[in-house]
Every structure is written in structure tokens, then in C-alpha cells.
Length: 184
Image 1 (spheres, rainbow, N blue to C red):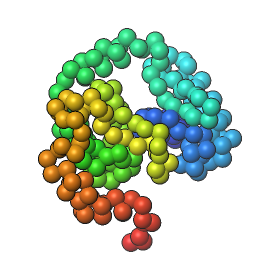
Image 2 (image 1 turned 90 degrees about the horizontal axis):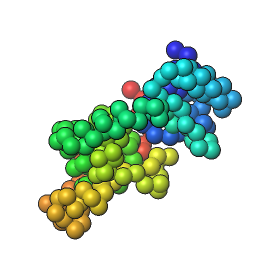
Image 3 (image 1 turned 60 degrees about the vertical axis):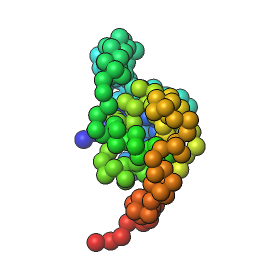
Image 4 (image 1 turned 30 degrees about the vertical axis):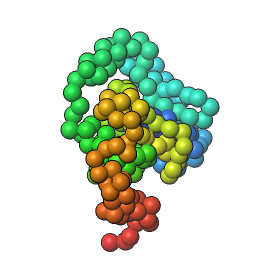
């Protein structure tokens, strides 16, 4: 797989922006090679793709092309009116009781990749990302809109909030994320 294809896959999976330096760390390549591969990716996507690379300083993100905005909006509108999936409800519950969490922390608890779920929940206005970061990632939390939708004034009004917020099993799972991997 070419380096530009690897960049495309990583940026798609992340569902947000990454610095060129971080992309270099992930793909184990120097920044100069990442930059050259980004130019190749941008050129490839410029020839009729529904995606494009956007840059803001050293941050790079894979986004939908502005020409696709009408279709993306119509899909987003339908999705926003649909009921929450089981995975979305699970993610909302975890963020309500344990948040704010980084995406890796959330994925450690859920046991599955969560970038798309987070993106959809953010589009629906029930989850937000904050710039405060841990592990080099933004943290995600439920929004006030979500709390109001539940008819609450704060998350501490959730059933069993105090016991579930600091549950020892979840603490152990999160501790595994910050511990170095043990050899087999």
C-alpha cells in the first residue's frame, strides 16, 4: 500500500485532524515523506473524489468535498431524525457516566472502534469534543442538549451516578490503556 493510501486510511479512521508530526509517528516516516505523500493524496483526490484534504497550520484532516455538501446534508438530516442505534446508546451511556473520555479510553471500554459513532453523535448535537487533551487526543463528553433532552439539570441526577462514575472494573480497564503492554 502506498504511503498516500496509508495516510488516507488513517485520516479516515481518525475522523478528525492530526498533525503531520503525529502522522509521521503513526506511520513511522519522517515529516518530509508525510508531506510528499499528502501532496500525492491531495492530487489524487482532486481528480473527482468526494473527499479532500484540508489543512490548518500543521493539522491535516480528510473531509467531504464542498460539492457533496447537499447530499451530505440530506443524509445527516435523515440520520439526525432516526432513532439512536444500540452502539450510539452504549456510547452515550458511557460518556454520560464516565466522561469526559478520549477516544482511545472510550474504545478501551467499548472494545470496538468508535470514531464513526462519535462523529454521528457530534452531528446530532449530543456529544462534543473539548480541546483539553489527554493521551494527545481531544476529550468527548455529552452536551447540555443531551442532558436537557433527558429532563435533567446535571449528570449527577442519573440513576446510580456516583457508584457507576467510579466503578472499579472500569477503572481497571482504563488503567490498562495507560500501562505499557505486557509481553506474551
